[in-house]
Length: 89
Image 1 (cartoon, rainbow, N blue to C red):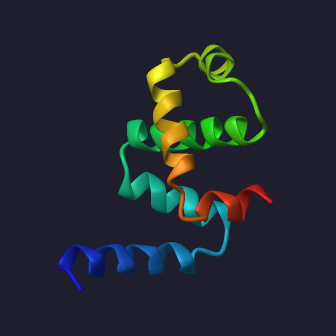
Image 2 (spheres, rainbow, N blue to C red):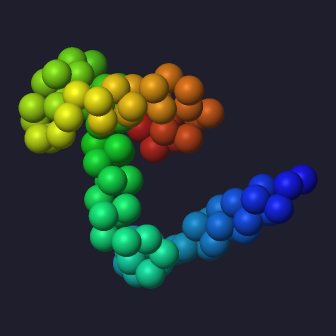
């Protein structure tokens, strides 16, 4: 196992220990910049809309983001390992 794999595993363990939305918010604010948090939240909004069948151009317009960002979100959804699905059910 690579060192980076251990770091990712440790980070995943930390997320798994969070018990409330408030804890998650505080942890994200400490861990990420506000821009990074916004980007992650935006990706989630893109994925939700794609799964609901919304066209990429409509998502771009609705969220006020570039079509390229929506396309990257679509690629992430296509290559998903099942993580999105756990929260979309």
